[in-house]
Amino acid sequence: MDNDNRDLIYRIESSFNRMSKGQKLIAEYILNNYDKAAFMTASRLGEVVGVSESTVVRFANALNYDGYPKLQKALQEMIRNKLTTVQRIEMTSELEQSMVLKSVLKADMQNIRQTIEEINNDSFNDVVDKFLQAQHIYILGLRSASPLAQFMGYYLNFMFDNVKIVTSGVNDILEQLFHIGKGDLLVAISFPRYASRAVEAMKFSKEQGAHTVAITDSMLSPLTAYADHSLLARSDMVSFVDSLVAPLSLINALIVAIGQSRKDQISKSFQKLENIWEEYQVYVGKNKAKHSDKD
Image (tube, rainbow, N blue to C red; front, top):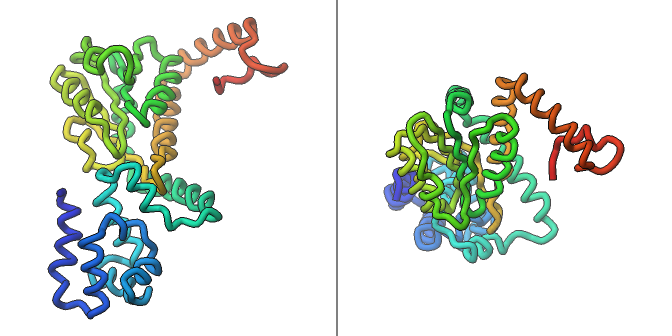
């Protein structure tokens, strides 16, 4: 259990004797059912425990959290990498069908807001420079992160001729990284539940002398242990589906920033591509040659 998780448990246990009867009921429930409590609203938690919503809010304040949402976030962080998909579904069973659309969209918006607030601009710019300097670029994404790697690699291939996309396939991951070495760049994309092979790939690439970049959700991610740079994007989920909206926005920003540094080369590449697209009627309609937003 990491330090943040121990801190939450410690707060509850060290404050227990000073709590009111109602607050103790909440504390006991959370300690025994933290996986369920993490996705309950304050009113729902109060209902299950048998106390008022205001008692739940006071409980959060007694633990020095700035309101119940902060306590709930701490609970979710504690369990997010341990939940199975079945548990994720069960945890959100309280969500009304009529609220699904708004809840998911609001969660994605919040993920982007937090990513903007927490992103390290210096690290971002350093990573852009590493792309421009790399002899070979490897973009790795496994399982649900695979589409992100494919998307990133698709655009980078318009700017560089040294990009390799590494995903699950016929060859083992480490076999696909066999030639990586000093002067090369590995970008590994992984979010809870983190793919163990992604961590192994980071470790292997680091040992081979490559520069390593992790695109992940938190400094608690196992990828960061082997990363020279870590770019963090929130991926807090509403259900069994991973939220990859903020990670995709971060990748978009990287592509744009890299593109600005290679304007001349990109212009030549796309001019040639426009001619190819038009000749082979890649896009539908009269303006097909003006579309560069692929299939």
